[in-house]
Each structure stands twice: as structure tokens, then as C-alpha cells.
Length: 252
Figure 1 (spheres, rainbow, N blue to C red):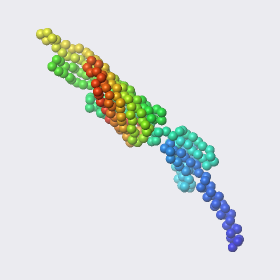
Figure 2 (tube, rainbow, N blue to C red; figure 1 turned 180 degrees about the vertical axis):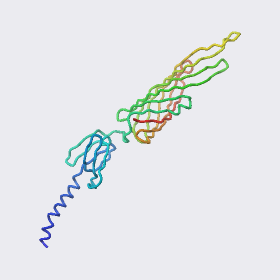
Figure 3 (spheres, rainbow, N blue to C red; figure 1 turned 60 degrees about the vertical axis):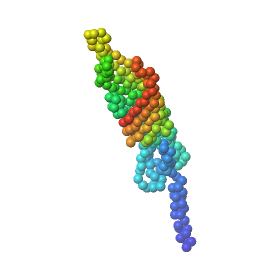
Figure 4 (cartoon, rainbow, N blue to C red; figure 1 turned 90 degrees about the horizontal axis):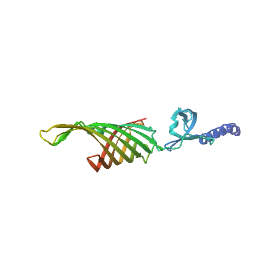
């Protein structure tokens, strides 16, 4: 009986030390979302990290992009830091081109470019559009052609960063150039038709609120509404005005 105990003692000690190493000898992957993965790192590549789950050391090898990792703490206490945790928790891209399909209602085509800064909590957006109104008139005459060229700048703030559903607020400044050919009649009889090329600028300033829904890290839809004032040169001065957008967005 004693012989059997002595013979099995080395095997028990080996099992004990192996199990102790299994419990305490793990690497810890810290993700940018704040989550952690207990693992055994097998490779740290240029763009990916390969590992096995600590709970299944003989199982399959998993891979994760380094951009989704903030740091790795190895079992010996050493660390690899890949970057601080950001508010972009979905890996959403930092540039965006949007098509404002709501502008079609007012006979305009509008595209915009937006760049994100400061952990993707701030955005600088520049819209460019062109529109055309075919005819306007009253008892004194009418206007032929009404092209409109629009642009401006939006400064947006994303308090929760970039997520699947993202809320933002900001300020928007817009400018538009209107060109047309005015047709009217002379005041003396016999009346004569007079055509004159004219143009005017419109300026507006708005406080905006909007929401974007990211279906993937590269595609989103959303909308915004802005309340403010508009000054149309020669026609209206500082009148209340509302603007809106419905956007389909490509992120890259």
C-alpha cells in the first residue's frame, strides 16, 4: 500500500504543477471596447494577433485585428500596448461621403464629405450641391431658369463617439448662389419685353441634431434637422428657416 502511494506521488505532483500553471499562466487581451479575453498568445503579427482560448489550450487558433486591441498583458507581467481605448467601439471608418436624397424633393443634388477627429467625437462636414428651378412668375413678369449652387460647413459633435446608432449635434453654416434670367415688360406703351441676368446670395446659420445608423463599418443611413435663420440677398432678411437631410453614407 505504501509502495503504491510513493509510486503515484510524482504523478500527483506533476498534475498539481501543471494545473497551477493552467490557472495562473494566461495572457490577457484587452479589447478597445473594455472587454478582456484570457488566452495563450501564439503570434503577434503586423495586423493580427493569433491566440488560443485559455479555457481550451488544445482547441482552435483564433485571430483578432490589432486595431481592436488596446493592450496585451502577458503571463510574466510584460505588456504590449497598441493604443488607448477610443470611443469608436465598432471600428467605423474615419471618412464619410454622403448623398442627401432629401434634396431631390427641392430639385437639388447634394453630396458631402465629412472627416472625423479627436477619437471620432468631432466631425467637419462640407456639403456641395446644385439645383434647378424651371419657372417662377407673377403679374409683372416671370423668371426663366433658376440654377442654385450650394455649399457650407458643418461642425458636428458626437458625445458617445461612433456606434451602431450614433447621435450628434452641431452648428451648420450654409451659402447658396442663385442665378436667373428675369423677364418683364417696359412701363411705357407699346410694351417691350426686357430680359436681364441676375444673381443673389443666400446665407443661413442653424443648430442641428441628427442620428446615423451604421449597418456596417462602411455603410450608414441617417437624417438631421436644423433650426436657424436665413438671409436671402435682396428678398428676405433674417427670416426663421428650417433645413433637413436624409443621407446614405459610405465610410472609408
